[in-house]
Image (cartoon, rainbow, N blue to C red; front, top):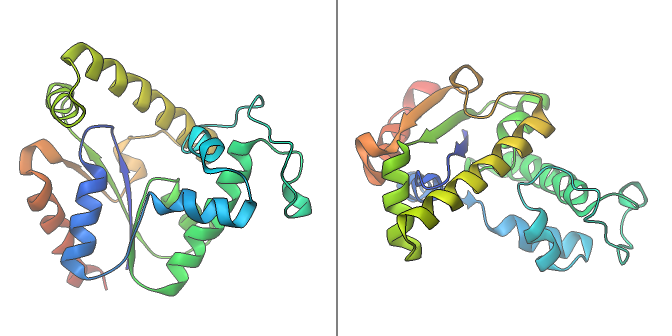
Length: 197
């Protein structure tokens, strides 16, 4: 079973994915996408990090890309999306796993690969409090960071998928992490495994 997790910023989606992967004893793929994409493309990680989970930006070109012919002349965002798409399919072909973000649900849908698509949300107040504590920000700073990150994720997802980010009908399961907490949310998802195989 492949689990894909979309998430609002501050809802704990990465931590829930990590806990789910630990609970089930399967790999988690999230932040390692940049490292793999750097190795595959030769583009510096700093450029890829600026492009990660953001829609195509025609100003983010790289002049030092000497990789595959079909990727030359594309923006860093587009190169990264295409490499990450290949990685999503590669990971899904290897074993059960958890993939966070990167439009993985859409990529697997297009490839007709069975998966459980999950969206993690939480009330804004809970997310502000969480980000404030984690990043040592004021509530105002945390709220601004959340708004900016959610806007980027929404535009990225909608640009590459043509679907509405966070809209319940686009996912198999939507959970409010503030209702259950990180560990319990992961446990709820893990308990579905037997029902879906």
